[in-house]
Image 1 (cartoon, helix red, strand yellow):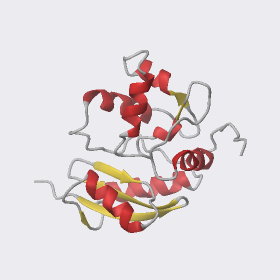
Image 2 (tube, one colour):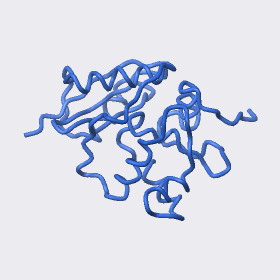
Image 3 (cartoon, one colour):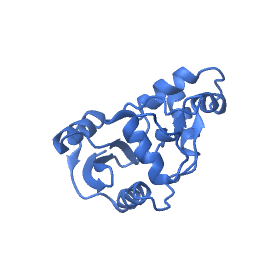
Length: 177
């Protein structure tokens, strides 16, 4: 039986939360305005989660997320995720997205093609907007066809996306403002 847990952790972009089950990480919440909102987000994603010490594999994933957002190399591609309740198309999109290396970017259209759905860039955007595990599933590495940031549904929107990409050393188009 699953006994989901969660924990808060500090990063260079603010306090995040991660939630897990016995299968793997099931939720990552990027920083909200208040920690209580970050906790509420992870609990919405993982009902029944209680704050607790993370198991070793989750603690290692947290260390890697903290390092990545601090501009240090970290590979999250082997982190176990619990995506049992995620739509199959979304899972394919997340698998493709997880293969994008830190500091690299691609487009929504390229992800759609790699996921077996050429022309479904908008559906990829919707899948990434519903991503339950940002950072581990690096949706911030997916850009619009013209190289602009495109959307980002996390708190802080495109500004948060830009900060995450810059921390990884990705080439990001400058803004006019």
